[in-house]
Image (tube, rainbow, N blue to C red; front, side, top):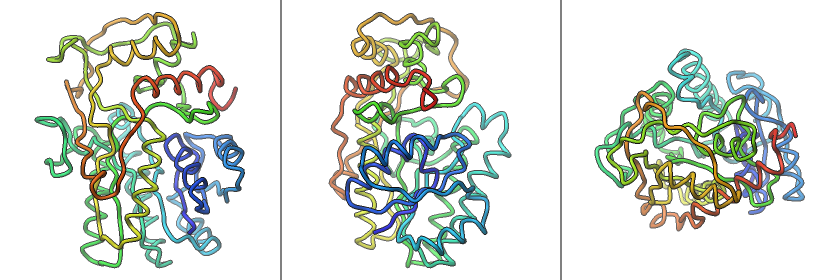
Length: 337
């Protein structure tokens, strides 16, 4: 079976490419390299001992997509391509709407033309907004509190409408919680442009001496240590979840939705302490004001994914931090190292 992976040189997608190859799938990667690096694809090929068909193209370019689909004759698509920084999405929302939403429309039009109707979509727990209670289940009310989250929710709605209009589609909506970590080889990992927006890549830069101190946004939440609690999931567990979703789509389930998380919440301070164990030293941090839109606690109920797909996250927070630090140590400047 041949799988076309949009945004396939990115962080989560590159780990998924590797798991696909290891599971015996053929992989085609389409990526415009705006926030990723071709070196990730090369390293995946080396780790797997198999080749990837790579195309530098934008999902907004319908003609380019059409030619790739004609040539490669993919059986299914995993759709990761998209801009993903919450803060940036608030500053330049139109760019996010054009890239994420219009790009997905273009992709779906070409898939329809080519009669490729099997899709795994990279959604996000941001579609739950600020959940009123935990753990979060798939039937919670959906709303977005920033333009990035809104693009994910709009795309989910589009896919539900598409399926309602044509039941020959099979679609998995995968709502990620907080992916961190790296492949245990230290060869592939998260390599954000500029100053990282997310907690663990930022901690990694401090541990490596690239940044001075960790910023803790608020320590006055209603949580045991006052810092925000989130569900962190190892990126390899997340990647394996995509393989399980693809297997599920082979059963012709129609449209299905799954939370991919551990079901365990860790506070910011707990993550820092775990990272200190991984790197063997104390890490400096400073407490600053809460960020607008942040909330106290969110973690998944992932039981539906286990019940229906047989998928469960098995790597704990210490493993996530160990693998993150190994990647950072081996690649202090990311793929440019």
